[in-house]
Amino acid sequence: MGLAEAIQAVQDRINNSALKAGRNPDGIKLVAVSKTVKLNRIIEAVKAGATIFGENRVQEAREKISNIKFQISDRKIQWHLIGNLQKNKAKIAVRLFDLIHSVDSIALAEELDKQADKRGKKQRVLLQVKLTDETAKHGIPEKDLMDLLQKVRDMDSLELEGLMTMPPFFDDPERTRPYFRRLRQIADSMIEKGFHINELSMGMTNDFEVAIEEGSTMVRVGRAIFGERNY
Ligand SMILES: *Cc1c(COP(=O)(O)O)cnc(C)c1O
Image (cartoon, rainbow, N blue to C red; front, side, top):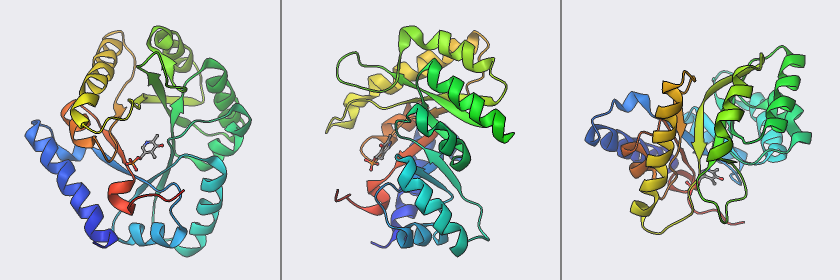
C-alpha cells in the first residue's frame, strides 16, 4: 500500500467510527505522526493530502521543518509537538510548533509563555494529563490539573485549547477505553467550570477508533500511515 492509500484508509476509518458514534467526521483532525520518518516520505504525505504533522523531538523537527520549507513552500502545513518538552527547549519549540500537546507543569507553561511573549506569538497548547499513577513519566496528575488550567488561562501568550492523554499500551484497544472516557469526563467537568477546552488529543494507531467513540478530536497516527518504525 502506498502512502496516499494508507492515509485514505486511516481517514476512512476515522469517518466510519465518527459516524458510528453519531459524530461529525469533520470534528476530528488527523495528526500524521512523522517521528523517525524521512523528509521525502513526509513530502509524499503532504502531496497525498496530510496537513498536520506530529513530531516528538524538538531537534529532529527543527531539521525537517527548515528543510521542508524549501521544497514545498506553497503548501500550508502545521507542525505539532506531541512528545515531552524540556524547559530549555521551550524557545525553539515556540519558534517551530503551531500546537504543543505536552504541557504538563507550571514551570514549563511559564517558560513557554515567556518565550511566546518575546516572539509576539500566541502559542496554542494542550495540557497532557496523566491518568495512571504508576509507570507514566509525563503528564500532570489529575489532582493538579485544575491549578495548571487556572495558571495557563491567565497567561497572556498561551492559548489553551484542550487536553491530551496517552494511556498505557494494550494489545486490545478496548482496554484503553476507560482512559479516554476519563479524559472526556475531566474535560466536561472543566468546561462546566468555565475553562476553554475544545480539543481532546487522544488515540493512536492501535486505538484511535475507540478514542473517537469516546470523544477524541485529534488522533495522532504514525504506524498506520508510515509503517512500523525501525529505531
Ligand atoms: C509515537 C506517538 C504516537 C503515534 O503512535 P503510533 O502507534 O505510531 O500511531 C502518538 N502519540 C505520541 C505521543 C507518540 O509519541
